[in-house]
Image 1 (spheres, rainbow, N blue to C red):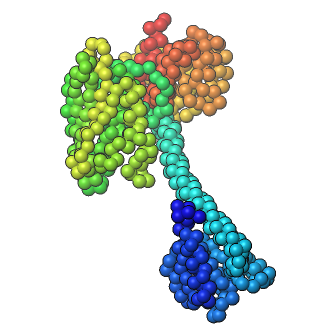
Image 2: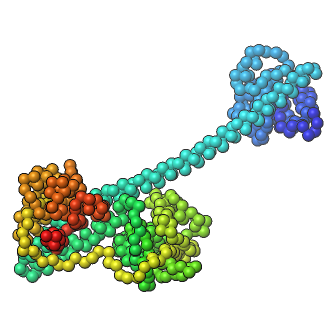
Image 3: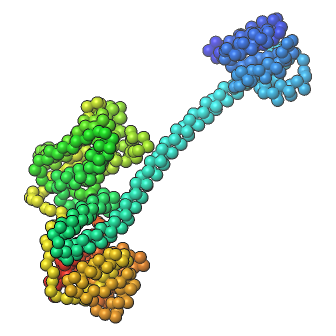
Length: 533
């Protein structure tokens, strides 16, 4: 064997015969092995405890501690190190015992050329087998580590997905709660407005006006909540005024930056510095989401309080007009080593309180609007986000989202009107509003009951709820269209934005009123019918 090919494995040889130790050592060193020797079991044990070896060659028969005992000790001290038992005498039972106790091989000491060749063949085979086992073990450990890491990542992703699903479910639940709350507000608002018209005492009327104002404020809050939590479709973009969105978002988030902050003993100030800017083209609800997520990020960064400044201005970039919304905070800033991850899905620094979806959602929405969202941040100084959207190509003009409903005058004409709603309080309140105007009003608690009544009598106007068990308002309106196409159908809904105006036209629905419905809106709905006569 040439020097290049010679091995360098470390072999510990244990034999009570120093002559055998010397001869064995010379023979192994000649083959390129690094040899360590021990003639006493205690010395061998200390060497095994303090050093690593690739192989233990141990004599079977020794005083004080035989080869089997040394084998057992080595397996506890160096479990992965192979052990070969040597003997000058053939003993089948000893060989079997040694192999059972973990020896890799049981060989005779070389006494001639033939035995010497056989000896080294089996030594090399044992060492090669040990190397292979170590590689397999290392690969197995690597695989186990990779599996553990992937399992951890999958578990974290699953937890984030569960949180995301909980948020989606919360949106669905919120929509249902908003629907029920709109029914309650509708009764409060309707009864209050009727009492205002009946009362002569100015003191009582003043109290009722306070109730009416509170009910209208509650209705506005519910509408904002519905706009934020509703499940969106791929809607057509429309002209949107960012300054109006900012006003609404600041109001929506007031509980976070004012009420919750004060409860925590800190003060967060929100300042608005908005220029006169043109409209952008987009989805108002989605752009609200962007601003809400950016503002929440700012609030969370100011654990000791601070100031958030929201600015809007027009920028000219490459001969194009861009509307920029700038949100700056005086918070802790974003660490430089995580700035590249801010828009990554599921990345969060908020432990169990964050889903890691807020900023990635904001990024996705802005991309869908063909805009850009960037930021600058410095630790301990704060962060500024920039949301840039292309200015819309049309004349800058004020476009109120919700036209103001003017006070209506009661009509002197009387009609046969049917009110359909599964909620008794809502149903009776609407009926009484119409009866005050002198109309002949009937009531039905379901779509099926309404159809039976329509078959027995003609109604000029039918007010129907949208969401009812058994038969929805849509299904009822389609039945009315077939049975009494001249009837004027008004749809009333507590589901906020879940209105399909195209479907309304196909179902012969003439008007859609969101709950809670005011007294004036009911009068306007009747007047709309009069205008068709």
